[in-house]
Length: 142
Image (tube, rainbow, N blue to C red):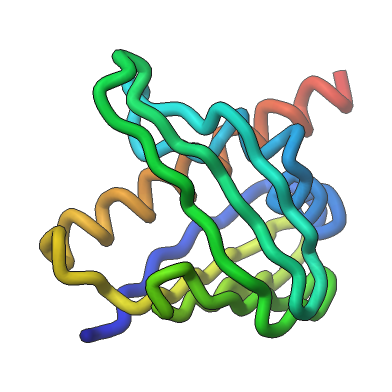
């Protein structure tokens, strides 16, 4: 097992980025690796020991699964670490520099998909998050 890292620079304030990253009513709008997938429901208890579950599904109804785990460490506006149901570890760190937030996410690879596929999928989700946050923030300021 190796560690894969993805990142994105988001043009919005840290508090806003954190809120849209962690609230279920926002997660369902950005948490998909491609346009033919969606997150149909989300629960998120963002605290040490809290659990989360995001129900992800192909829009054609051909496949679905729960992406779920438990938080190991939550440092608000800075860092989130969790363990997935299959015991893989994920670490997400937020860095702010003049209203640009860099999110760096590292995760243990799994064996059913190539590391390239895993990197592409997780990066696509983070890119969707960036697009969602920046669009919401522009609308908020309009």
